[in-house]
Length: 123
Length: 383
Image 1 (cartoon, rainbow over the protein chains, first blue to last red):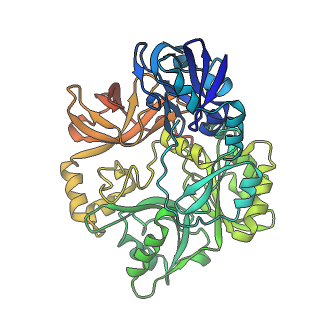
Image 2 (cartoon, one colour):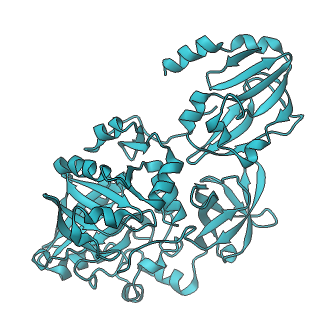
Image 3 (cartoon, rainbow over the protein chains, first blue to last red):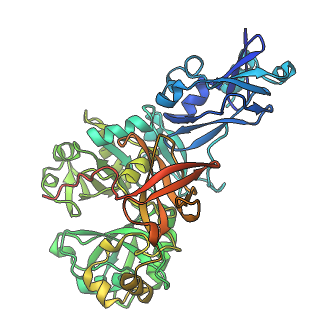
């Protein structure tokens, strides 16, 4: 299992051909209190970098992009009733969607944990 | 994840005298109306908002424009201001404050402002004005261009402004200036905060009881630190200021009202006293009096979305058949309401409270209805 990161602060945790996608702890800190998450429907297909979800804080709405191309196999419906989970546990219970990864080569363009940490430190 | 859009230019940002205090408190800063302002502190907008509604919040609003109209007596300055605004200033009693708008020749709103007549008879012939930061240069130039003989306008860039808002504000401020405890909503007085001279008005923009305190730039940090040392007080940023004023149903200039809206369309008829509505004598009076007689074609209303999804500024409002009837001008999430809320303009035929409408958010339709404002009851102290 490995986790890869985008410059837009999404993560994808890879287990076999499935990737669990969310926003990073850094991202939730930047957003502030999350009050609503709009999730796609199961079965929806995305290309890498396409809008997959929307996360709304008190002050603004931000788009969440698919870090890899693929098809949505599960969404975290618990976020509907408890959007603050994204703030409390962005890397764990605050995940957004699970995607069946269409093209494993997409992962090569993403950062590993060390590179992502260095990237955040540079911001 | 996309960065929320901002509409700031690249011009260097100005700083209020509390800039370094904000940084030391861990504020997240951003450009607003040309100033580098605290958007939120480490506790976050949601907690700041709820704290203001349950305890007391301190806001730095020193970016706002302050100035004084000065003439030989009250009638002279009142007349000068009444030529620009539709409120009754002539009959504003000493020590009282009023909300009004600068209007252009077509009755469009150039800015909204607070006007205070000093309580002290020795200061008769003075009006204190507080205008929006983003409009202050234009406002001041506008005032100066329309001054009658014998009336001067003095900008007050040497003054800072703090707002202390919330149910504990009165108790907290009374520890420093006891004479502020009993003053009613929309009144003002000159007093001392400890040894610091200041002007206090019982007003604000959160819907809560509270005060705005005008004080010299070189004294404001001492005052702010003294207030922050009170156990009930936390610093509050512009993020919570926006969600608080939206729940209170108050307009944000440049969004909910602007040059394209009249006070009648903007549901601000309450701010135009009867004498002015009848006599006119302000810019755009013809149009405004016609709208008062016949009704405006559109109206600012509260809009309550069903469900949890916020509808932001710019969201299209449609009727039950999907026909466009208006636009959201402010929208988001209300922490005290614990749900989404919006205000905007709809065609008069759809403006009645209880009318079902639809909001089109990212291509999807959300059910909503027209509601009366405020969304959260005002808690003003009326004495």
